[in-house]
Length: 271
Image 1 (cartoon, rainbow, N blue to C red):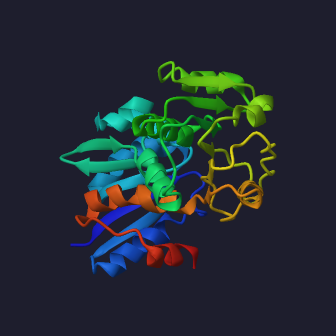
Image 2: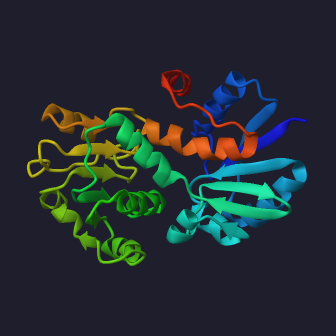
């Protein structure tokens, strides 16, 4: 029997997840399909209850449904519960099980792309959306002592910081450049710098020379932020690896095989 999984979002046409999972399905000879589904907010509840009846074993969840999908789940992992958002759903025994692998994917990508990164130094996270939730939690779990948040809307950053303890603090958007002083890693979790979006203009003068700059945007692969950081000698990590690594736990849960993240997968997704 063909195993069904997929990804839901609004919009969804831009997603590279079908290409990613399709590569793994072909590599491992699995009789399965991974389907992109355009689901509007008003249809989310009905869709999540219909998909298991149609034979789906689970789905990925992308913008803007991560928090709503978590709220509709019957059970959740600790990492999903800690941030109140889900990017991975598993359907079993008429129940919806929620997970969030964004943080897992982020740390795996960071360690692979910058093996000299040290988790014992402060971090600066730019943005306060759904992706930032998982990334802040993952940084703290990895041992980062202090995480500073900056967001164009300060109240949204304060709300995110409120999910965590005193290790997470907030500074004004205009202070982003100064907040880089002493950091071991700077992370852009916003859409700024993405194709079709305004650039992320930051003053990097206070950034320590060894600090890693990572952008979760992967279209384009090399954002202006990464180019500016590389030009001054900082190690940089693009966002594609986060997409690849965060996908692995879901694939294993749905299709029963732990997939490998390697150059062949990266090339297939970029093709």
